[in-house]
Image: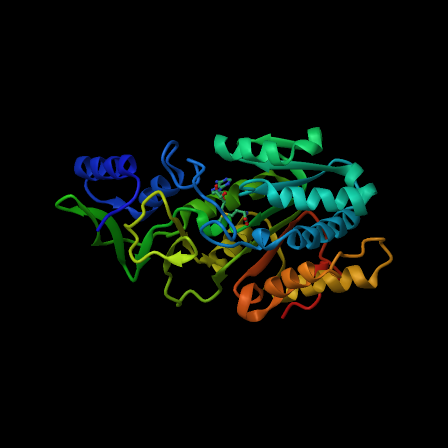
Length: 345
Ligand SMILES: C[S@@+](CC[C@H](N)C(=O)[O-])C[C@H]1O[C@@H](n2cnc3c(N)ncnc32)[C@H](O)[C@@H]1O
C-alpha cells in the first residue's frame, strides 16, 4: 500500500498520469526534496536517537573534532594560508560545522583566525536551522546556494548517498508507474547510461570550483561494480518495508559507487589522495594528533567520548560501513599521505 504525505502522493500520481512512468531519480527528488513536501525540504527529517537514523555527526562532537584536526593538517600543508575555506555540503542542521568550529576556536586559534566556513545549502528550512545553531560564530560562516571558486577543503558526510539515482541493472530500468492509482515499479529496457548522473555532475561542479586543495567525502558504498545496488528506505531507525510507503516521511539512500566517482574526478583533473575505511581514517588522525606537538590533544578521556570513539571506529558499527575518499587539486603528490590515510590499506 502507498502511504506518506497526501499532497506529495497526489503530485507524483498526477505526473505519471500525464507523462507515463517516471525515473526513480525523479521520484526520489520529489520524496526527499520537493520544495514544500519533501522529507528534507519540509524540515521533517530528524537525525539521531530521537529521529530516523544515525550519522557520524549525530554520534557526538568527536567526529567533527577529528575532522577539524585533519582540516588543520591540510591548512598546514597548504602553507598556513589566510582565507582557507572549508566548504561543507549536506550540512543539515549545522551540527558538524559547530563541532568543528568550537574545537578549532578553542584548540587551534591560529587556524581559526585563517579559516572561513562556507555552507552550500539550497534548502531554506535547513539554512534557517543552521543559522540558529551557528549564531555564535557570526561572519566566520557564509552561506551559498551554489559553489564558487575556493581554496581549501570541500567536505561532505553522507551527501552522495542522498543524491537521486536511477535504478538500472543489466539493460533494464525500474521506473515508477501506476497500477490503478497505486504507485508501483515498472520495468523497461534502457540503453547505456549512468545511474548516478546527479552525483557525477556534483563532482564536475566541485572540480571546476576547487582552485587548490582537497575534497573529502565520507559515505557508504562499494568499489566493485558487480555488486547489486540497493535502495534503502529508513524511518524511525527501521528499514521501511516498501519504497512506496511513507513517501516524504522516510529517508531514501543508495550506496555510493566510488569507482565512477573517482573516474569522473580524474577526468576533471582531480587526483586521488587517499581511499580507506572510516576505521583506518580516524585512527590515522588520532595517531597524527598524538604524535605531534600541536597543542591539539583530543578530548577522548571521558566515558562519553570513549563511547563515541567506539561507535565511530568499531568495524561492526560505523568503522567499516563507511569509506573516505580524498581527492586533490593543484597540490603536489604527497611525500607523506594525509593524516587520515597514514594506515590506509
Ligand atoms: C543523510 S543527510 C546527512 C546530513 C549530515 N551531513 C550528517 O552527516 O548528519 C543528507 C543531507 O544532504 C543534503 N543534501 C542533499 N542534496 C544536497 C545538495 N545538492 N546540496 C546540499 N545539500 C544537499 C540533505 O538536505 C541532507 O541534509
